[in-house]
Amino acid sequence: MSIEDTLSLILREVQALKPVKLDDRLLSAEAAAKLLSVSAPYLYAHAKDFPFTIVLTNGQKNTVRFSYNRLQRWIETKVRLNERS
Image 1: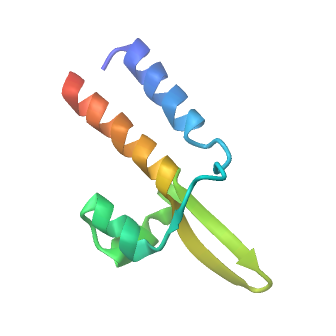
Image 2: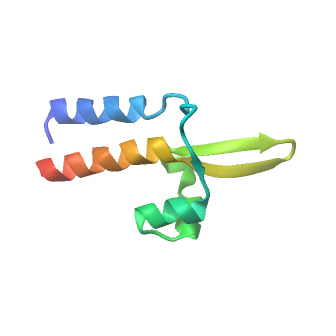
């Protein structure tokens, strides 16, 4: 992978961190896992590694959800990188 490809990937990952749009949907782990073809437990275990993870804080309890828009952008980025390989 060239430096340009690496920088482009980093830029897309940073752009994926933009605030959730109002037309976005927050998915459960089960729904997001289906889109990614992984299990919900895997998604929970690696949630901190994904730029589409949203943690909702309610007092002492945190709820993990996944931004549909960010997830779609992340998938598109991965597909484009695989096409270049």
